[in-house]
Image 1 (cartoon, protein in one colour):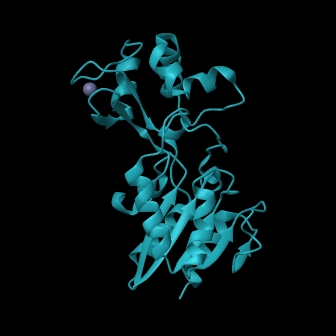
Image 2: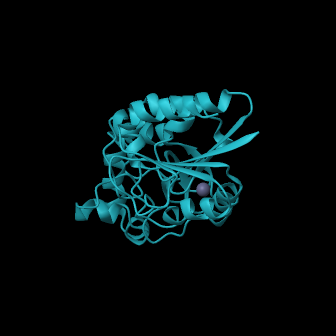
Image 3: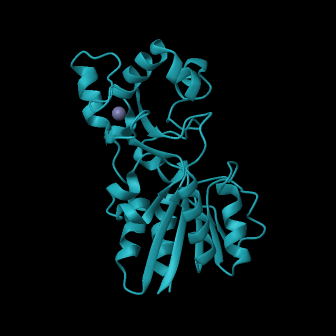
Length: 239
Ligand code: ZN
């Protein structure tokens, strides 16, 4: 069994109509109001920020986005015999799973914008249900279990990455035989360190991205072609 790990960033989802976000809640950080909505303290302490965040989520492009050829190619590789696939992703769009990759094979460093989490009791429910309550007139829907503040299940500014998620990502990276970086310029930690860790542990490393990354010089192969066509071709050629 060959373990192939895909480290994916925003570039894999642009063909699905999702712009290259920087903010962990999937909003533009160039907009100071949007930045407040993506910052934990503002979100928790200011009901007005939460009301605006729910209005943004009503029309969130992520909820209607569908997987593209690159996501489908990764899911397809996982169904091939003799290959085990793990995805470590910086994306919060859930499109790897939507393409058919089992949930347990996707490690989401920054969480998932398709669900909401109660900040008191931790209950996790679909984003669509919470948005339906906003549509029905609730400006700031609260947890139905305990009344706590609900937030998107993403890692906001001011929050730490989940330790368990991070540990799993490191373990998978170390164990990889092939490690493929897709659609990220590796500017954000901890993901930026993963390709080097994979290489240190003997993985063959490949970068698929339209822009240079700090790891390109060390990679065994660099592909600077559109992801939607080059990734399916690359994965089909893996032996
Ligand atoms: Zn709760």
